[in-house]
Image 1 (spheres, rainbow, N blue to C red):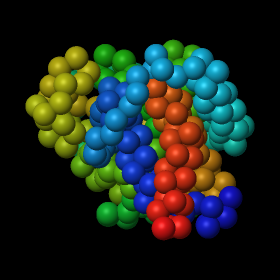
Image 2: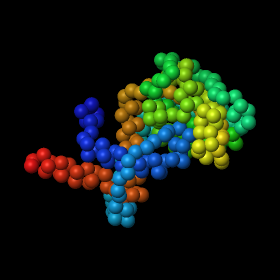
Image 3: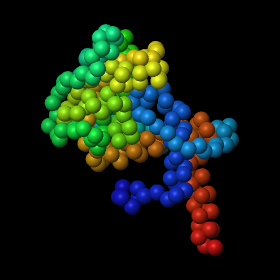
Image 4: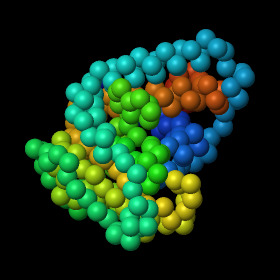
Length: 252
């Protein structure tokens, strides 16, 4: 996919913002400790008005893209999964008393992440003091066998993540313990309550092709599937209608 194909019209940006709102609602639990998202509101027609064939169409597109993503990230998953035994219970009080703690499980060979640097993607797993995983890049928390997503860090991370990743190198694996003060304090319930510390294992990777585009396409495919299955919005048909209106207006 070349750069011109990635450009969007005003109408496309409108519908992308609709997708963003849906994502906030449907993913707030899974991304709560990491991504801070927002947007404007849009309207849907209700899932009962969309045919099962169209829902299956979007479902098939998503699962096809998911299979491509799993194939592309297979080697990264094998590398990352070596450190799954590090996901252990920890002392909540001690974690909250010690601010931000970082240690490299594997020193990467790529460039070093500096203060304010958000130009990288990241595979991750985040867990609570009782060893419960609250979110991850895995396709399954219980029996992970592949990655199903990767974070675009430029979307916005908690302070503890940004500080804890300073000095990490691309391609490495870092463990971070983040006290509530640098996570969500009493502003968000996570891990069974508020003022909870969080732990992460993170593998930063370069924000480059083909992963960069594949990750964006995977997110878009899932969002369109969500729109169809739960909100009755047929993204492609809506875009066709908007394009027709736009063409008519331009002709006039």
